[in-house]
Length: 232
Image 1: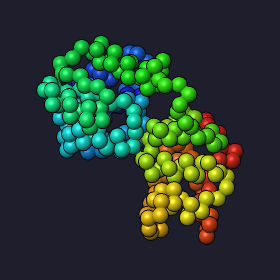
Image 2: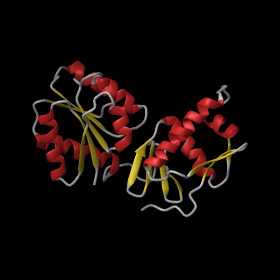
Image 3: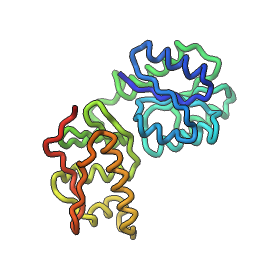
């Protein structure tokens, strides 16, 4: 079962898309808060996004760029704009495909299936994707996703690097110096900036049901403790 995120401000179109997607046994999530698209994307960690161009607050190009900073999941634009430059801008901002309104829902479903096969299924490149695993926790660095059991969350680039560093050394303590070097090379970063990133990673782990997993070891650093954990 795949998760498809629908970012469409026309309720009728959004509901019809949701209905067609769910006929195929997949999960469709319709966004209603158009000023929090990235936050909703990271919360639901979808496999694919259907994205309109004309949206309240910020347009689809903006949200496509924001999503591309944290994920490589397929993005298909669905828009009433049918000019060549609209399609060019969509692709240049990180989209994988473009569908012009009005459209046949069968074509939308065929395009969705094509992208899912390309990235996750029959046509996906085999044996090249790297994973990091620790106590049932699985990190996909290339797609910046963290999975535990049936749950998954999208990560930012910094969160991905931080999780990979902690997971590779678990259950050992990772010093603040090592983490700082991994995240920012030799650049000077104050303690508050690191603490903010640790807090964000703790939040992602909590979304997976792992609230007490990332420990602070006073005077030394941080430890990811997955002992006796296991996906539900």
